[in-house]
Length: 412
Ligand SMILES: Cc1cc2nc3c(=O)[nH]c(=O)nc-3n(C[C@H](O)[C@H](O)[C@H](O)COP(=O)(O)O)c2cc1C
Image (cartoon, rainbow, N blue to C red; front, side, top):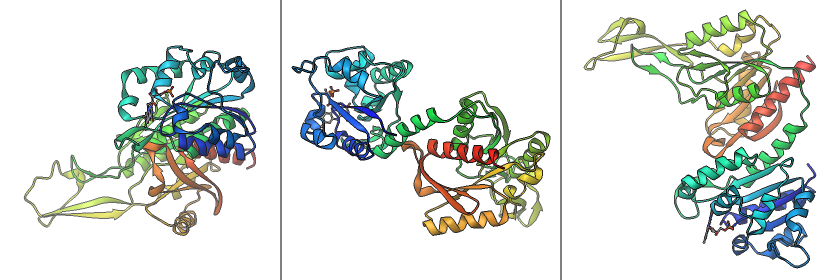
């Protein structure tokens, strides 16, 4: 992207982080013009901003010779980014106040051009009803409000409100423009599985895993919004999508396996995005004081007994998806999650999965690279055994999977 960027800073401790972002965009060949509030210039020097961009920073609405800046800069820029966006400036913008350059520029903003805001503030300020209301209002006017990060804030508090990491701000903006450039395409028919299986122990207990189904819901919403026909086969307790996607619930391994056979056998799907966290084992039987019973035969196990669970291995559903499918050329996207694995170990896990399954693509992520609260989702995408891409956010992952599917379907 080569763009003219109007980069606005308001007075937050996170101004120093914004400098990295400015520097990155300049180094990539974009033209960056900074505008700073008076408070922002207490956190970062005008010389730093001029040194990074090669252009003096605008900060005074009434600066001699530049009094039309609030109109001219809007016409000049391809997009605006307010980063960091303070509670004060966001609340002022939402009330249409134009008593400084940032406010006047916003009032003069041409909404055919994107305006992004990356909030940065203390959790209490972020949660304040005034700020919540302003963020809602600004979003309804077309401002793209970026999420905030969560973690230790400059004031020492922990919580939401931290500026999204500069690389993630960069990626969000770049993705926005990449999306606009994407040509329209034929709708896809997709089956997405998500959430964790629950293997019953007795009438009320089960063995499950920590999969929330959040990524699956996000995939489903995204493809639904792109006009695709989506079925989400999700665990009963998994997060539901926001869009009115067709949802089918499953509980146990057997239930998921049977439903996949039914759904894939009945209708033509172009691809299965298999995100569900499937148990490798189910409870075969329970020994209660040496007496063998099946999980379905007991109500709630009472206390005071000697209990042993006997687990039997399950088959790998991912190996059978194409076999279950009416469309024998269905594309299969498999996911491999590892925990604290090195790059080499991750690659080995992917190759292992490819050896026994007929997955066309494998997304590898390691738990250490996934931080949903801060929008971070580091993942590597493999087409067969070849690493094709590395991404750092969930949105980038979804779009990369989309382009892999679209390209593969166009060139079978
Ligand atoms: C050390 C320090 C750090 C601050 N950090 C933030 C911040 O991260 N976010 C925020 O909304 N306000 C922060 N403030 C308060 C703002 O700087 C203050 O509300 C100021 O009036 C904002 O002006 P502006 O929005 O015109 O830039 C901070 C103040 C101080 C003294």
